[in-house]
Image (cartoon, rainbow, N blue to C red; front, side, top):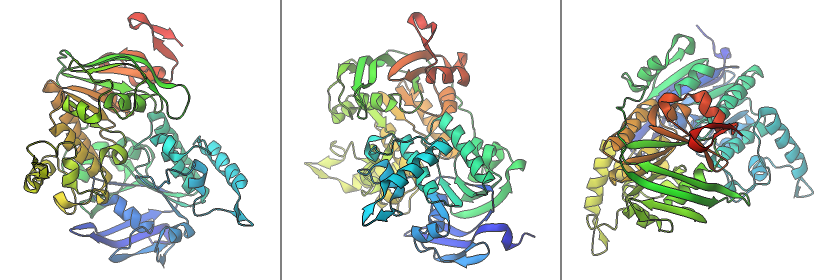
Length: 518
């Protein structure tokens, strides 16, 4: 039998409750020194809550935490940092109007005669970013950098504090495949340095690649802890959700119809640089197909979708939806014309976090006659409508329709957006990273929903950084590099390696789809 000294951290019989829900129900987790320990569970299973207890963001109703066999009290994150515990959060804890450097040193600033000593901090940040391959611009404002870059800042915040127990809450959710591989190497490097890692993820491949052991949670309860060597992705999935999960997308061949979305010579400016982020892009998205825009993060995907969805002004080209010119249309007009949008950043563009779930589910429809009479919203109708969507899409929350969305897990926030956007019955569904942060059961469900939209004759424009998702889900693939389309592919006739070459800009297709060295 193992003794307490084998464990650097022990969370024993932890119970954490919120109004209407027991997020952690008598959960025990033990982290060995120098191991990578995965924490697996469905959205809302209590993983982030458990880690927030360890990091001092929440206080448990019952249970104890031990470090090196000694009981400790963690009242807040400062206590956690003093104990050598750091955390990379799923939803970033960054001050958007501050620079990258200011965010990294926030709370542990060095001063001299009352002035911040930025020079020493800058040297340390640049050294860490070089050592671990986490390149950042220290002077850039958080509000101006990509989601993937913000993730790097979160990791550097933890490294800057010299923590020895590292909590990663969905750290790869916003990273490209190449960045994920780099992060896996970084984690292996941490392990070699003797650091201990708790790693929340929904991605089986990542668990199989780097984890030593895995603790599974289901609906707030601990199901068990297993050695990864004796497991398969299928067995872990079944342990997590309680039944077999289809890991491959099952779909019939597409039957593309007429063009629903026509984009011609589109130009979208960059917020970060003087040059344009999207440069003369043209393509059609057709009824009855899933068209995927693939590429490494930061190559214009975000700006392209912003231009199509109306979140960013375009400076050249045209956009037509079902034959109607929407190039300069307002967002509501685009919605009325038949567009639904599952945004990349669910907090910034998908939800009003301090609204209830039911209000968020009717955000783009409350003005319709079904939901209001003479300008007065019919609350009973909204409640009934939202309860049906919550049931249909298995959106889990503590208080159902009246749950404040900010208190929900990231995966359930995402499911709420997807429910709202698909229910609008759009002609065009723009889905950007639709399964980011979702568990395998939810991913399976969302993929089926997207395929069902395609089979119902809708055009689906998918943007994904997950190459496996790109290959499994799409009927046609466009690769975007530095704001230009450099290749068009049939997923049945290409592979991840070929896509990767085009994504890196090493090749591009010329006229007629022929390859040309860049």
